Length: 404
Ligand code: SR1
Ligand code: MG
Image (cartoon, rainbow, N blue to C red; front, top):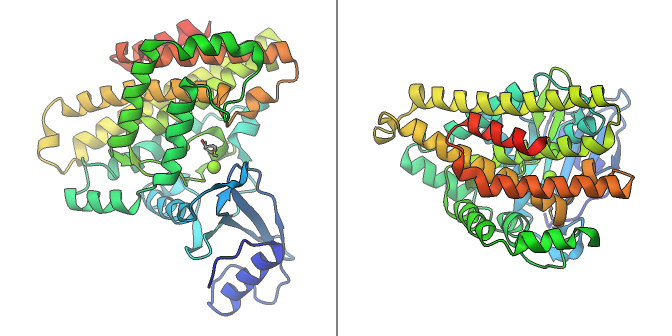
């Protein structure tokens, strides 16, 4: 059937059809269903469909344009296929931490997913300074297992190339290429920052060393298909509670550099860290929350690296890549890439098109500006100094020197 952008009634009719005609065990066929649209992300429609007993599923549908901008920014519907196929791939490798796909229809660019509405979006929870002691462990498992088992360490060269082709995602990658690397170094109508930041932004955009470091990060993003990335590992792509972590929304997924996802995740922890300087006024509470965030950051990187090294040592199938020292060499590059991508995430979320509510929601304009100065300076220092960090301890020391 021809693609139709859904409303709530379409969503109900579609699900009823799956249940009554195709035998999907989503709802009791006798139940009356209701639906509403509640998507608040940048790109898609998101419906919750419920029965009279409050059982529910999510129907996510891609629009042929970017929702946050409108029809003037056309965008491929193929992103719905990519998202569903990344979720299936990652779900097979890290099932506890990946949202479940119940059905996918590429023609209608829609996916039916388990409803995770009993959990919170990590960004909203962290804006309220809530702590999640298992988050680091869960994210590290998700990124290291999905990363390793989609890499050349494990896949045959033939399988790997077939997967690179399956997950070729040029239009969504171009958004990242523009927002992370191009726009932050130039004046562009997509950029968005207060005039008080102009002189700092101009200095940053005139820094030749920064241009060179970002050229290296972009080149790797363009031409380094190391593994199947989530591609958009920010705090809005993670559902949490005290015991649970679930990754959602990998529509930006593609084969890229291993450091990109962990760098983006850490960048979002740091955006929240800086924002809390303006949000938590009481010193002891702020210190306590900051220390939790820093522990989460250090633990996620440490476990991520440890699990990668263990998997390399125990599960590598490629004879050449088994060479003594290669795993350590590889992970040192990943660390430096992750620090660089983390820096670009901090910069682009401060001055680019897509901001974060952690910062934009700070009511006091001067306090918000102070945070923006901090995230810009931190991002710049991380990008510039990533190559000096030969191990994670050097990274943590660099960070701490910039956070105080
Ligand atoms: C037009 S899309 C803007 C941003 O939203 C997505 O979640 C990605 O982070 C992208 O960069
Ligand atoms: Mg998203």
